[in-house]
Length: 145
Image 1 (cartoon, helix red, strand yellow):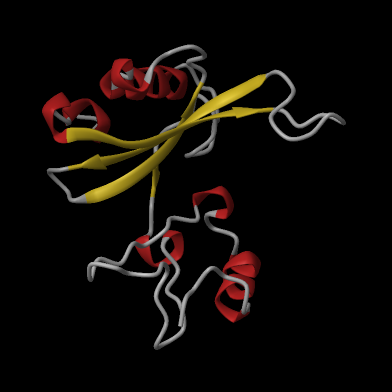
Image 2 (cartoon, rainbow, N blue to C red; image 1 turned 60 degrees about the vertical axis):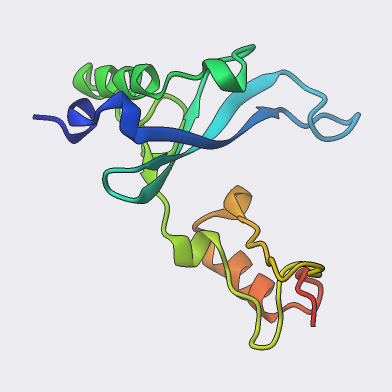
C-alpha cells in the first residue's frame, strides 16, 4: 500500500503556506500565479514535509492535504515523472538541520523579551548547500548576539 494513501487525514497538519507569483520587471510577485507552497506536519511520524500545488484562490483553512497528496499519487501512477517538492509532485521530506540552520554559538535568531526564542525556517532555498554555508558564515544572517 502506498505510504501517502495510508496516512489518516487527522494526522496531517498544515503549518505554513505561501502563494508564489512570477517576478517581472515591475518587481517580485507581480507576474502570474505559479504555485502554492505548503509545509505540513505528519503527527504520526513527527516529520515535516513540503509540497507545491496549483490551488490558486484556496484559503489556508480550506487546504485539504489528503486531496493534494492524492493528486500527486495519481500523477505518479499516470507516469508523470515529477520530482518531490515540485508542483503536482509528491511531498518532499524536510530535513530540519537544513531547513532550520543554526546560528553560530552564542547567537539566537531574534531578540527575546520573555525568554522565548524563535527558529526561522529558510525553505525558499531549502536544499541549497551553497546558500546554507553562506547563511551560517554570514554576519548578516539575522542572528542576534
